[in-house]
Length: 320
Image 1 (cartoon, rainbow, N blue to C red):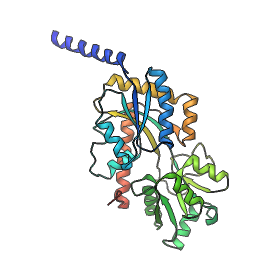
Image 2 (image 1 turned 90 degrees about the vertical axis):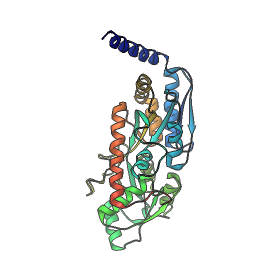
Image 3 (image 1 turned 120 degrees about the vertical axis):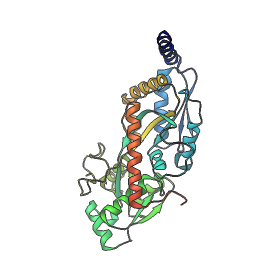
Image 4 (image 1 turned 180 degrees about the horizontal axis):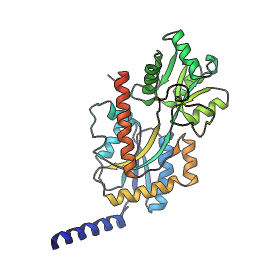
């Protein structure tokens, strides 16, 4: 009995010491995409706040490639002391949902720290198509099967899976035209090379307001704050069609709980500041802080949703 009590006291003291000593060296945030994109902007905004709050430098380390697998594997192999983090996205869920042979377990090999943001996608078209609503798109696709095209970021992207899912729901056919990034895909629909695209809502509405695109619908459960005049897919007749992109912070699985809690508190505090919120808006996303448990549940549900989407559409990952 005495030994048990002593053991509990020692564990509590170790946890307290860990919380007090963390962080003890510079932190690193891995980003699975190149510099300049939304994830990079978000990581740097958080890094600046974390550095001030935690009293240690924070380095953003861009590790693009493999649909985020390269950076995620690097995190899984890192020392689990809370000093190496990953700002990941819904690509983490998609990779797991495809059931591909990954060099890590997408749930078991990570400690979930905090959700950073969520954002809907927006369906946009070139003004020259004449489409004003989602109903117009479906009517045109049924009248001329296989003539409409959409820009995607490859078969392992939410953009592609979203279109494939919608095609099945609406019982229509469209041609996939893959691009190497969101920028080129957006440029293609603005230039009229493709009929449609799913883009970050803030980017889509900005171009729509400039008269370069027409915004047709958003994929969120409610209308986007940046585009309150654009209906959801649900309002347009497809109540089951809901998709949200997200950013979240992960650490290696064995990261001490006190370090995870300290990081979560700092990230949540950052996301409540106007400065960080403004930076996220420039990246096209909305701050959406969470507890570690909420992020873990969110990712598990997201994987299940994408797995269902893949099963329904028969989509295959890149290179298969």
